[in-house]
View 1 (cartoon, rainbow, N blue to C red):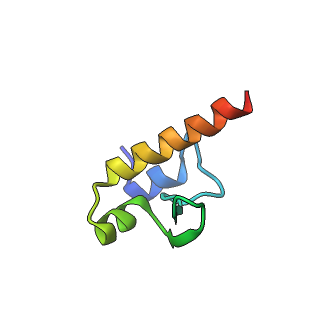
View 2: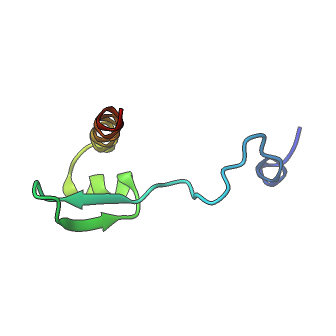
Length: 70
């Protein structure tokens, strides 16, 4: 048994260089940046959209970019 602090210090897969959230860039259909959000949950709360909907949209956009590269 270890304390939460000890558990955090002994991560098996440390996530160096990235916090617990990713920045979300909100753009118009033309590609102009509207807002940069610090997290999916913050964007969801402010826009009154479920965070999982934003996450899924980002996933599909990333998949589309990968398909275009190959």
